[in-house]
Image 1 (cartoon, helix red, strand yellow):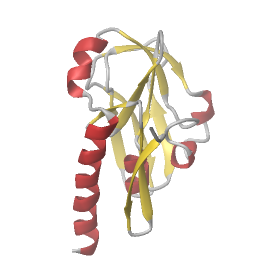
Image 2 (cartoon, helix red, strand yellow):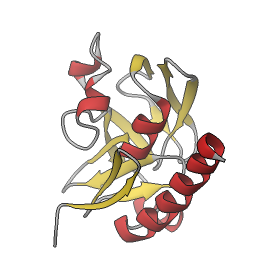
Image 3 (cartoon, rainbow, N blue to C red):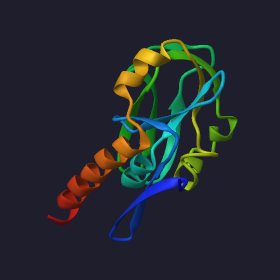
Image 4 (tube, rainbow, N blue to C red):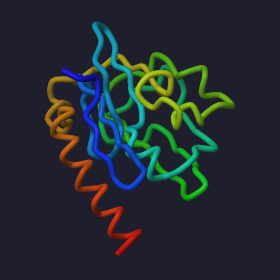
Length: 151
């Protein structure tokens, strides 16, 4: 299986990492043995533009799925980030301080935002999509964005 599913539109290639779970609000979850890594999708970072500021919540914070866990500011907009799962924030990516643009460079690896200790993963999965399911949703979003831009 390839690492990524890819859709091309115009000069843009939108990538979805296989093996990850996705929340429709454009955050991904990579489940490891005792924790989950959370980040922003390639679609979100490409359609919003260069990230110039990332506001995160503190390590140790307990959140529920769908609660606000931060904001990104780009040259185009301010976007609220909603937690894709419930759990405790056990780490905030130290590379983000002063360098939030690494999300634009590598959203699925070095551009991760949080590590969480999940507290309700099995029921949270009901609102998450597989890579294939999210890929289909993302292609619909790409088509809508293109219609906005090009009519």
